[in-house]
Image (cartoon, rainbow, N blue to C red; front, side, top):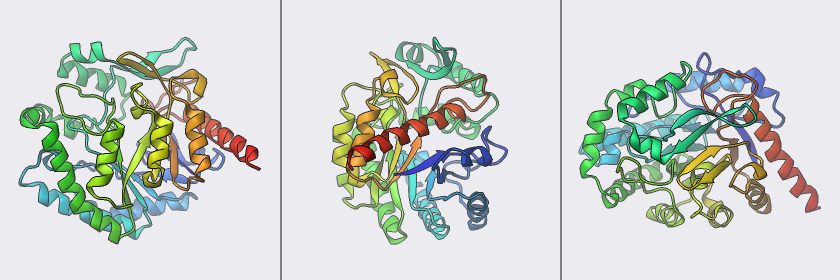
Length: 354
């Protein structure tokens, strides 16, 4: 496996590339043009500048997360063809600097949802948490305020101000969209995008819903094994793949993650690995250690090792430790600890197989 670390760019991240370089065997930066919103044109000059900056610090730039999908594509509006053409153009441009994987999602309106950005644990660390009762009881306005107040001045991926400014309008547009229609709109998108991805050697990797169930009565179609099978069959091509997120998929006990990963390993170019502790419709994030959560991270690494996984792995959200001030979920310390835990498991399986 190739170890990666998500980075939000110079002057937009509390973590520096100099710090990431000190995490053993972390070769890739997962990056994006984070000032872009869904539907924006990515210029070749902007892409090249950011890619060259990261490369100059000694890292590979193989994975981009995210090239966000405009809501008009998800809604199936007439204008979607314009935004699909922009997306196709971005794929072509990213291929020129050596990008191999694009992580994206097809979640309506909200990329992810939490009830708390800094829930305290007994050890004094804080974590992202989801309590369905809290989420469903509070207003959208209160949700926006809570996210803004808890972000410590950073933009949160999927919660950019430009996107939130259109929230009420977007939610209204989805009132008439069913799951079946959302499936048809995803199929339309994939049939337009995957041939371009194939031509330019990029694997598209869809991210699961977070949380893996409907919120605010919005359709959600990427959260169960049957959903993943259907997505891969819509365009049966190795360039149509998955971002296998153990935290998103593992937030419900209905998903057997090791079995799912075994089934989809050949169509999984990118892994997000984090652990969560589940309690009914409540979950909170923990250290990556298997014993600390409900997700068997040990089994996940065992599956990856058994298949000699050659894709990309990044530690997903970490706890906030040692008074670190950072974008919620994206501090340095716990993600670095997570990487060393993942490598420790990998090395143990490597020694066992000799």
